[in-house]
Length: 366
Ligand SMILES: CC(C)(COP(=O)(O)OP(=O)(O)OC[C@H]1O[C@@H](n2cnc3c(N)ncnc32)[C@H](O)[C@@H]1OP(=O)(O)O)[C@@H](O)C(=O)NCCC(=O)NCCS
Image (cartoon, rainbow, N blue to C red; front, top):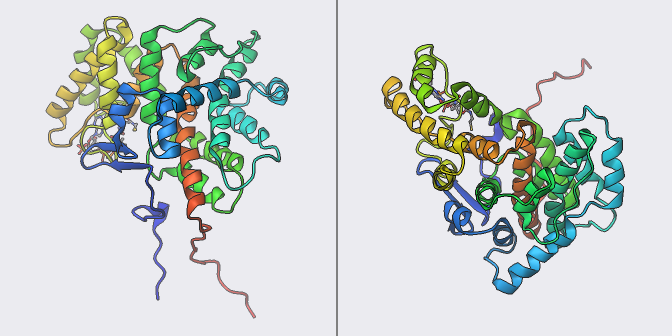
């Protein structure tokens, strides 16, 4: 029988999951029977981590304990502080995160993966990013805050001051909306590694390696560059018309899977719309989005071009003063929750992944 190759495994179902549903036709994203959008608007990152890891939302006591565990686990182990100091200065932040997470893998991490291990890895990731950023600039590392929640503490460790409530809220929504998204390349990588009964640290290290690639980790900085160039609401229409007349693409619009509104962009828009009075940058983003959708319909009628998550991710990250080089690392800090959930799910009904390949290399002469 002729072997059929499905490049990129497109359309192949490789696992049953209870964690998330990505429905591109209807613009729906579901985490464990909840709309991701509702979770993003109403729940903290820690609560949604609990949902992904345990299959249900926590009660008050469980949430208090989880937030406490996060606070206890977000300090850098001593050997990571030393490691951060000796890594080459030109090492990209994604490689730094990958190396540090790998270096956490002492002998205590054993198959099967456990929630306590997922907490340790998820809690420490933003601390690695913030510490490395300060060390690179020759600054003192800022210790994690004693009481702030996970997302607010990330901003605190980066900037050294208690963040505005509005900034923590909108970044929390970004974290929740990007923590899980079906069988994408990094999630699949983590499940393949876990399927060998390797430890969770190895699985997450591999996933970070997959996320580092530009085809996956994205480039929301292209959107910030576009908004920077537009500069003001008055310039928006003229600038967009010029681009479309030249046949250029607008960054942050259109999507391969979502042929209707991307629910993540919708939710972030809802959050940002409430904050536009407080932040001129978000105000500009909301205006540019409305103009772009109107003009895309005029120049590209019937193509169903809507805002994708990159547009509002960029707007949100820029609004909270996140430097462009930390966009993908920040995405990694949220997606680690989905990876760890997938690794644990894989362990519940495991079979090692072992697809086949079609040999085209010829046969020995004899
Ligand atoms: C994301 C993307 C690659 C999806 O591509 P796709 O589903 O294969 O759609 P196509 O590239 O075939 O585009 C279909 C039509 O819409 C147009 N189009 C798609 N995205 C557009 C955009 N952002 N701006 C202007 N026109 C766009 C194409 O030019 C094409 O027009 P045509 O029919 O006259 O040739 C594409 O929309 C894109 O390049 N967007 C901009 C970059 C971006 O935001 N990337 C982040 C993705 S998360």
